[in-house]
Image (cartoon, rainbow, N blue to C red; front, side, top):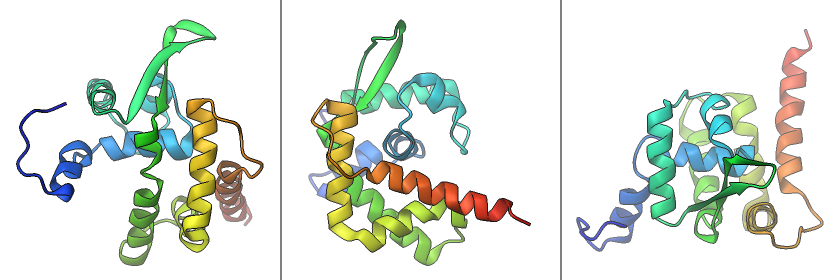
Length: 165
């Protein structure tokens, strides 16, 4: 972690960790896309992050305590990245950003459907999603409800509707 900060303002301190172009995208892809390997994060994002930038952001996010890395049990040469509790606790921030983006920016239907569901569901769905992320990333017991599956299905439904002529 950095020793010197511009100020003790909570918004400033948050921006010092999350305020670059790629950190939130990496966290988003881990959170909403369950992308946990370097290659998935590199190749499955619409924004097209460069490998050196991704490596730097993963390192910084680990240093700041938002993610962790362990050897992948299925392939020892691969790293498995996980959100920490600190990273999981950003779900309400992502929900608020999605709400704001849907309200003021030219979003696409398929990429904003998850934000719409999180906005409509409010804090109750955020808590359920965080519980599920804790199960996926921290090994906690899995909740009965799968918000991840609900968000994925909503996206798939929009994509299927768009594919029908």
